[in-house]
Image 1 (cartoon, rainbow, N blue to C red):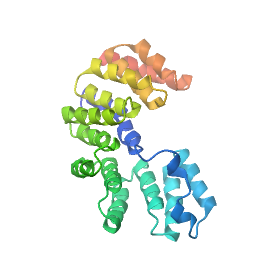
Image 2 (cartoon, rainbow, N blue to C red):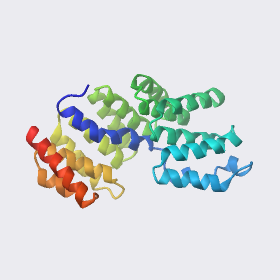
Image 3 (cartoon, rainbow, N blue to C red):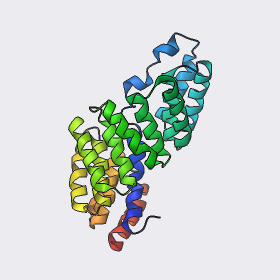
Image 4 (tube, helix red, strand yellow):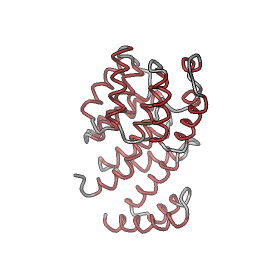
Length: 259
């Protein structure tokens, strides 16, 4: 059970799994019609519905659509991984891991499948299983940045902060100034007690054009811990509706007063 500051940092750390769950798996290529599917019995309307649901963060609906597509073409790896991705985002990490393990049994222990398996384990809170899988994947694909990035997440959840930060540093060597990795590095530093270092790292993240609203809201949270309520509220208002930002402001004042 989390106590003290750590439970509040865990609020921000929710982004670790969801954000890194997308590492290496989100982008234009994810939503192109799979070549294998296009050559078989394929329902483009159902595929478009799956894409739309995923883009709207309706992961359960998207998973249902991908499951229907996969039922018509059970050998299609691209569709299977799309299903896995949405199960993972939707909180069904164990089910996602079962599907990836079936793919590995069929196609072998390749780096891409091992990374997907590890991300599913992380989503399912099975860090003890994720770490060795990621270490195996790193041996197969040492230049793939999302492997050490995901390893950092798993190590953080095991309170292995120095090792986690080494993993993030490796990911940043491979993907410099990556805002998601910087975000997770900052949260790791914060949980380890280095709040000033965490804020400095997060400032690098929010300066990146591709930084997400979650990264900026994490900045607000860490500034509140530092006692800078005004700065926290300023960051909150960059993305949140006024009434939500006002409510968050009450929380920031509580955090600043409590610590």
